Image 1 (cartoon, rainbow, N blue to C red):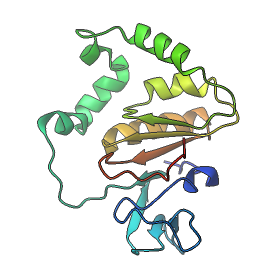
Image 2 (image 1 turned 180 degrees about the vertical axis):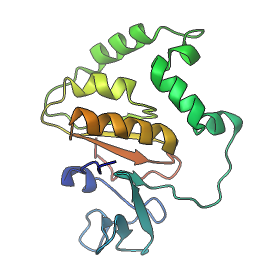
Image 3 (image 1 turned 90 degrees about the horizontal axis):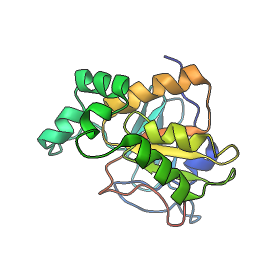
Image 4 (image 1 turned 60 degrees about the vertical axis):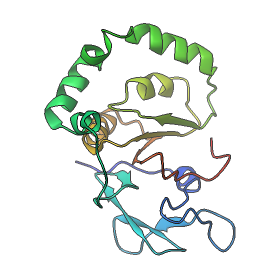
Length: 180
């Protein structure tokens, strides 16, 4: 799969989730590493891989995963989720169409906004929001790498280059204050 492009504006919003430090100039500590498909922290030197154009700020280290997260990382469930737009899992609890319409109205998005979509899954809401944001950037984050990989394939096919995908554990916040 072709790599997704990462807008430098998005890279300028990042802080290392391991040390949460800024660089010596007060800017973002994560920079593209020399000659490799990764980002490197200029402070603690930790490296973060780019996997199919997805910035992986979690890595493969030990972590506790509950049953629901295990399901969200299961490739068969990701395929079902993508085909149904998540409706099979959400239908007993809510109307996806109502949620999407309501969130779009409440956000009052403008063309130049920079947006962070937390728990983006396979991008149902991100796709909707991207229609309103033509000049800004969209950062879509999720803990499930299979969900992000599935969404990344769709982004590459669609040619949208304003969306950056990141694997993030939100308990280790990787964004500088005021980024969004």
